[in-house]
Amino acid sequence: MQAVRFIKQAARPAAKVLRPVAVSRAFSSSAATFTRSPVLEFSEEEELFKETVAKFAQEVVLPKSRAMDEAEQMDPEVVQGLFDTGLMGIETPEEYGGAGASFTSAIIAVEELAKVDASTAVLNDVHSTLVNTLVRTYGSDAIKEKYLPKLATKCVGSFCLSESSSGSDAFALKTRAEDKGDHWLINGSKMWITNAGEAEVFLIFANVDPSKGYKGITCFIADKDMGVQIAKKEKKLGIRASSTCVLSFDDLQIPKENVLGEVGTGYKIAINCLNEGRIGIASQMIGIAQGAFDRATDYAFKDRKQFGKYIGEFQGMQFQIAQAAIQIEAARLMVYNTARMKEAGQPFVTQAAMCKYYASEVANQVAGKAVEWMGGVGFTREEPLEKFMRDAKIGQIYEGTSNIQLQTIAKDIMKSKS
Ligand SMILES: Cc1cc2nc3c(=O)[nH]c(=O)nc-3n(C[C@H](O)[C@H](O)[C@H](O)COP(=O)(O)OP(=O)(O)OC[C@H]3O[C@@H](n4cnc5c(N)ncnc54)[C@H](O)[C@@H]3O)c2cc1C
Image (cartoon, rainbow, N blue to C red; front, side, top):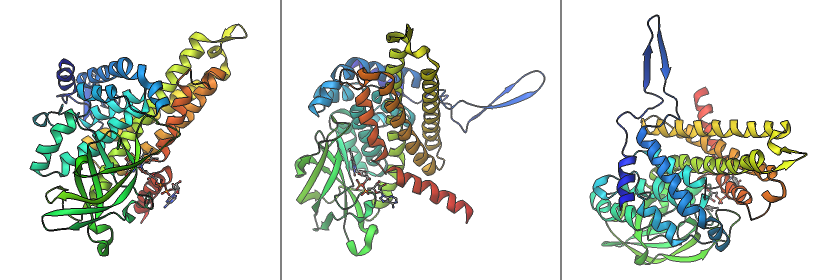
């Protein structure tokens, strides 16, 4: 409980949070200079929060990370630890049992967790940036009162949009919801649902009127015990401890009031939420890149000698390491700038697509290089490098593939020319 209180205090938005739009002026005796705050300058509270999450990641998650990957199973103690340290309700208002902290804090948490374990990071990310955000933003007072406290303290959430025949074309979904007067009846299935193995709360997108096309899509909130069935758990290349499941809904009855937002607005809700979620995935990717970089550079500069020198003393190694450092720095600047833009209420859709695209490219390149920098050792499961490399791949696929991000960016450029 002490940890929860600490996170709540540390994570409370700072009075002086520095934002890219907030311009600070410094005056010298001779001339006025005009500077913008550095994007990576966190408030004191955010720095404290970052340290706390890093400590949790090192002490609780790291010792379990390899075993969770091998077992393809999240350790319940890690999930409990996320709740106990307040990481499952970072942005949830304090009145609902959360920390009432900023979006940037949620992004910091995902990055710090991903430096150690990308599966734990995505569990936290989907729960925070998709599920909590949707309930907080679109839930009625009754839904917020019922779900936000349990999502902050004990129940994992899942976001259920994709289906076997609708991935990138998400709004071609086939799951149907019928209005039965006093309740909704949902039939259909979902695929690729993160956290489904642990979740007790599910946000389900279903169409109430296929004749209206995507304008029939509606977002429902369901408890597992209403009858959500886990049909199959996928066996994956990476983020293996993160559960990814097929769900089936066979006459699933949902109370009439369990609609998020208005009936028929599910497509808007999903788009808005995924734009924000992409910043979270980008943050997961910079965490992976940094985690791989840190381990491999320790090895190059402190552990491994060849030809009588540390391998990091060879220029051929140094230039690759320097290039990777530049890529990580650039990706991190993009991610945190986009997070601050979102917090400042500025349009950020294109920037979210850019940072997700770029951070996932960087994670794949840096993790791949880091395996090489450690030679044969990097290729074994004794070291975490091969895991970082496998875990990075998903960044180019979920919450919109890299092509879909490029399409979003290109559309924006085209619009600016018309
Ligand atoms: C581990 C994992 C976890 C996931 N978690 C969730 C979750 O929690 N909730 C959820 O709802 N979904 C989830 N997903 C689904 C994920 O968002 C989709 O896999 C993703 O959107 C891609 O859809 P798809 O797999 O059907 O690929 P497809 O859409 O079939 O794409 C296949 C290829 O075609 C390309 N392509 C498709 N359309 C175009 C186009 N118009 N232009 C150019 N190229 C195109 C894609 O870029 C890709 O390379 C998850 C997926 C995975 C693998």
